[in-house]
Image (cartoon, rainbow, N blue to C red; front, side):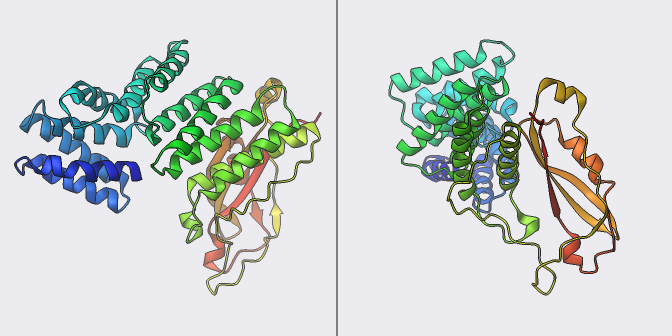
Length: 363
């Protein structure tokens, strides 16, 4: 996010030099939305600014800059929608408004997005990124994010060793960059942990190293001001910690956690600030390991959140599940059947109780 704001600020003088038309009003709305942290509103305003510039300015450095702003903002959340503005920014880059170092990684990424059904897409993206390194493209958080997305695709394809290499490249780029991007570092660390810990054959040392990356990622998640404000990033890290705990149990390992302080959520407290009491359960069945996944040898972890209405669970939702979305539905179905021995009287203690499930096959 800081990278986008910095880019937008640098481009303001360029855009403001033109006549104050619709695109400039939308650009100001984009900046204001970024400053207040509203990414959805920023994306909507960024697209309006770019489309208006296309009509009012045509082929112009300001159009290039605005197309880039919109494409960059949605590249990693709505990649298919980012293809058009990124390609347009690349087309206009020669006349100014955007640098090669900023646009080149994104062009490689959208080529991958359009081509990812092809079995060779990951290899081609890797080759493109290595070429950018060869020609001296500046290390930026954008480049690091593309390496991280490649790592994610490699993890999804079970290519753990090369995924780990891609994640380390992402981290190295962030270390070399003069721009801070905690979000990019978080995802690179998460990928490094997943790729290292899941690599075959399973090794105790690799799982210990995965824990190190996970706890480093956890330090990048700010402490939530309330339990309702806990970041999905926190749940995701803790689900991975649970998944590697499942792997530990499956292999009979006993690996200590790294000594890294990483508090990310506040405790459950009553309205008066005192800690909520531990619940007493009348019924708490355990989920069954799905037969089709047991046959394939999967392990995993799920975090399920719930509220309470009387003695019954309500608003049951899967907060995170890893390594893949295979166990969450099974866990949530069981949690809907849980019952307390007595109703909770304090309204604050009825909200967001979290249960963790580890799915592991014994040796």
